[in-house]
Amino acid sequence: MPAISFFEEDINYKLKNKALVRQWIKDTIVAEGFKLKELNYIFCSDAYLLTLNQQYLDHDTYTDIITFDNSEVEGDIVGDIFISIERIRENAIKFGHSETDELHRVIIHGALHLVGYTDKSVVTKKKMTQKEDEYLAKRSFIG
Image 1 (cartoon, rainbow, N blue to C red):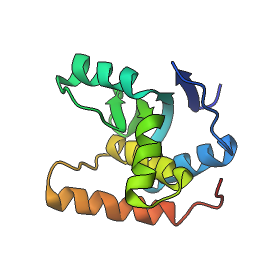
Image 2 (image 1 turned 135 degrees about the vertical axis):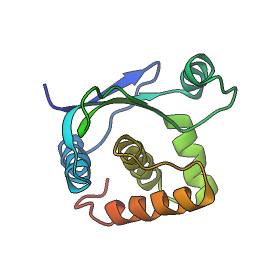
Image 3 (image 1 turned 90 degrees about the vertical axis):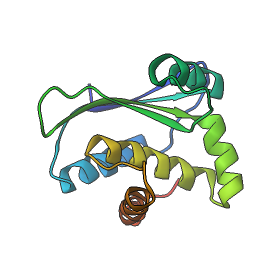
Image 4 (image 1 turned 120 degrees about the vertical axis):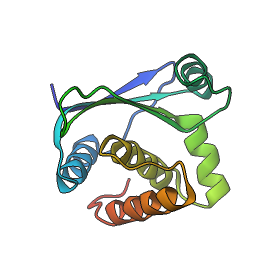
């Protein structure tokens, strides 16, 4: 089983270029000085992610991503990243991006959370966006 797996929960969604996306995520994690152990991306609906947001984070709002860090050893990456495909589609339109670019931004956003970046303040959000842009530019694939 690969260190990075992709699943669907209550939707039917197939990620394109899975092997290339896996390598890109792994390269990002390694570049940040971490070791990839196990990472699951779960593509789901708004309703599914809202339930997780309410249950685990006590937030009653829609979001595009929730990242769960399950690492027990410092420097190792073990996590589950839930992504709402409905939010990705709406945000792609809202921000004038392609759906693929928006999905890739959110995919790498989740990985960056696991390596320690946050987006709780204006300063940390700016740094995270810069890192997202840096790693998005390193994609050797589009699609």
